Amino acid sequence: MKVKYFAWVRERVGKAEETVEPPAEVRTVADLIGWLSARDDAYAYAFEKPKVIRAAIDHAHVKPDAMISGAREIAFFPPMTGG
Amino acid sequence: MTVSATIRIQEADFDVAQEIAALSKGRTDVGAVVSFSGICRGSEKGEPIAALTLEHYPGMAEAEISRHADEALARWPLQGLTVIHRFGRIEPGENIVLVVTASAHRQAAFEAAEFLMDYLKTNAPFWKREESAGGTSWIEARDHDDAAAARWTKS
Image (tube, rainbow over all chains, first blue to last red; front, top):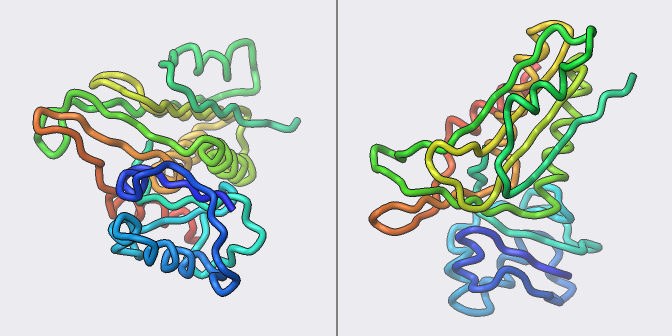
């Protein structure tokens, strides 16, 4: 699945998007954050406060307990400041 | 008649008067047009800023605004609805966002415009970064914006 990062999450991770293939036990958005955070310090820094991080699956907002199976695109970003 | 919203996510500026006219010109069923323009301030928390740069999530920005526009059309008797949100570098005094609502009467137009702006603030995937003499930094979300959006979910 494709993973996208925006704003300071993108800056901390060091890339705007990538394709990942998490193992089957990574089932929810929260699991994916944990799995990515374990990769290296850049991800750990981006996700150091998981409660602040917002997520979207296929262009719709989701909660941390949302299942990721079947998702084409998952995005992580800080609280929005548009308008 | 089915009313559909006009939604544009663009880097270019927009003409507020032209957008208002587009919803009301030549029509006799529109009795009220409300427009809200969000404009870049020249200071943030008392400090002067040179510009804002808005990052957005292409695809989701359109989808998220469309969902809220459809909800507004379902909740209020609107004759027209336009939402424009800019991205990229925007200097103080320039337009950032526009919501225009048209209805037979003012209450629906006012309420729908306020509903859309409250949701745009908290749910539309845009992020502002400010440029000032001290460098650049991401603007933090505000709790009162969440509270403003939450009141529309009360019955």
